[in-house]
Length: 191
Image 1 (spheres, rainbow, N blue to C red):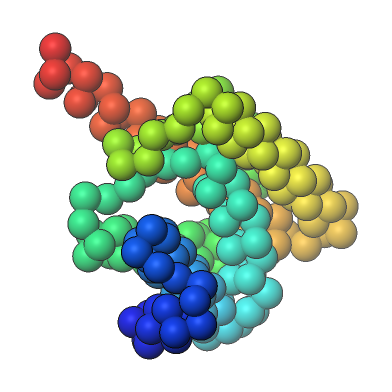
Image 2: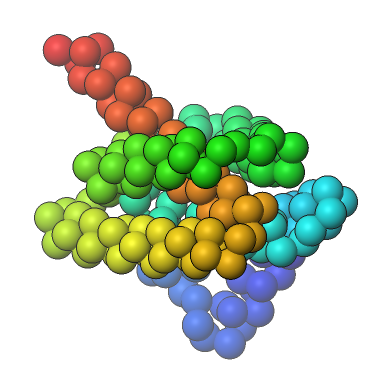
């Protein structure tokens, strides 16, 4: 499908040898994002509330894009970890009830990790100093918005949606911590 779209874009003059790889990567990301949203929508619908999956993606994706996080070494490993972590989050959201105080603590810890560590670079996506400032500002902005949604859900006594928002922030934080561990390991190896 991506090849057909690229061929069409070539024919229309939007793609050439100087931008074809960038366009192809963008199309692959769109396909991956759509597949992830579809997966979560189906899983959350089967578990009883499709809004949970959509809310999870709406609160997870913007922060993950700008904060960074773990990047697997292969596409297959990436898909396994991505879908596995999303499924685990859905199971936790639907079947593990937490006290509000515990959710607050988890949200504060995860938010703190995001504030302290974002943005995290991956070895295959280096950021210059201007990009780091922009990514940091945007990750903090989205974190504030998501925390507001969390507070709103608590105020409306929508605990399923409150857990959804909390776990989306936790998953971003876990990715940041994992990437930091990998960077530290790589530093020790190269010393």
